Amino acid sequence: MGYEDVLERVAAATSRVGRSASDVTLVVVSKTRTVEEILEIYQSGHRDFGENRAQEFAAKAPRLPDDIRWHFVGALQSNKVRQVRPMTHLLHSMDRASLAEGWLKGMGQPPPVLLQVNVGAEQQKSGIAPGDVAETLEWMLEMGLKVRGLMTIPPIPELAEHSRPHFRRLRGLIETIRSPATEFVELSMGMTDDFEVAIEEGASIIRVGRAIFGPRK
Image (cartoon, rainbow, N blue to C red; front, side, top):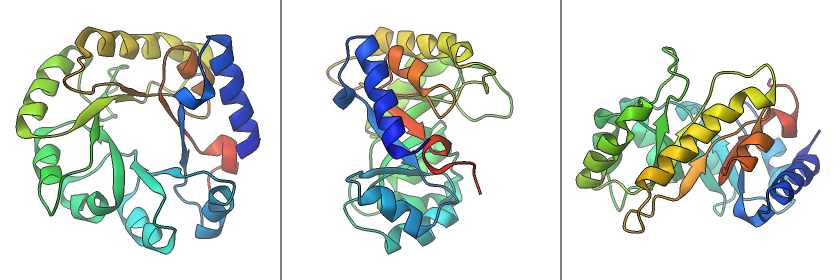
């Protein structure tokens, strides 16, 4: 377990399906982790990190190097957008009009976003229904959002293989609506318990924390 181990597993998973490890962005999920723990990974050359709590992110990011590419990967309340937007490289959890409106406000161009899709139809999770992706994409693009692709958090799997149908469904969705005009290319899917399966199913971004840092504090 650890950062180097995850890199090796990413390389092995991509090799199994004829992909390059460079095709996959590893987002190191650093929620609850200290600045010192993050810096240890940063000093290995890594630059993509993910947070999912607005207040923790706003307090932590200014204390870390400016060249980190921050991904906000958690559900975001509209009233917390101002804390998150200025430092975010990519928002993974866009899923409703009120959040879209808030994201578009502020100075400069808003950072790009991913549509969060609730592939498991779990009531407790955020995200749009798979059947609503095309319609949602249309109005979000009309609003002026830069939508780069899809994200999902499937039901917690007992075995990694149990996530495969969900990842395959997300890949199918993006293939039906992908267009060069929209740059709709990213698939953010796969976490500690199933990221290798996600890579085999076409993930371009994986979000891994526990396999790198150990059990969550």
